[in-house]
Amino acid sequence: MIGSLDGRAGTTDRVVPARLARSWQLVSALRLDEARGTLADSIVIDLEDAVPTAQKSAAREAAAGWLSAGSGWVRVNDATSAEWPVDLEAVGGLAGLRGVMLAKVETAEQIEATRAGLPAGTRIVALIESARGLEAAADIARSAGTFRLAFGSGDFRRDTGVGDDPLALAYARSRLVVASAAAGIPGAIDGPTITESADALTTAARHSRTMGLTGKLTLRGDHAALINDALSPSADEREWAAGLLEGASSGDARDGSYLPMLARARSIVALASAFGPLAS
Image 1 (spheres, rainbow, N blue to C red):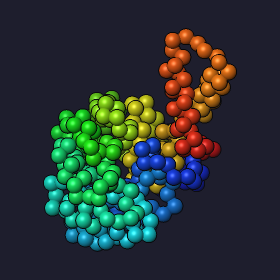
Image 2 (image 1 turned 90 degrees about the vertical axis):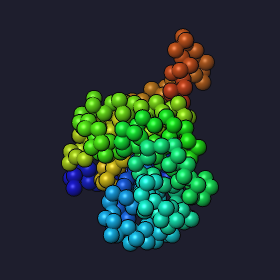
Image 3 (image 1 turned 120 degrees about the vertical axis):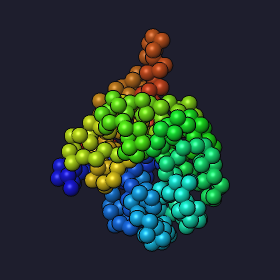
């Protein structure tokens, strides 16, 4: 555990809408106690990588039990897997299901097939984990079933041989950001950072935000507070936005850059309201 991350105050007790959710904690369906008390905006019950093949059935039962009494997202196995239709049948009709995260998406058709196997309106986060998936990101983002894109950075690196340096992954991250914006869907979710350092995690999450990603996967609940803070408007940004909007209300018009600045200020204030106060 990261001692410096333990005991951090949560940013808010309110439920953050999934379109704005910053921290997405993946929790094995076989270890759901790890989800209790988390500060993550969204819990993703994992039926895929975190579950050995022999335990898939038990994992689905555990996920169904959780969703019968609570709520969460579920990462289902990829659409080429024999486990995929069984996953959809097991969790698709449960009242606590907030949506599914589809592993290893490589085509828009995989999103549509998943959408057809779920109740109408079920949200799907498309996890892009390969070169083929990245090349199809624009089509996947435009699919009517896609709610958000997410970056499976670990599998992507294994597929492509790319290193973990931020510069090496900048192209992939930018493709997801641009594809999301062009399709008019909420911002993309970055991959997890595996680290024992609070400073390294904060730096990585701030880099995600600089790249235009608005969420981040994590495998650890004690990472959530730092991710939430790093992907929220800073205290300085909030102060700037409030001051600009106060001037706007008094008719303080400026040059041609004023309207874009005003739009940014309104966006910051709206996000700050949705997220609540920063952790101290």
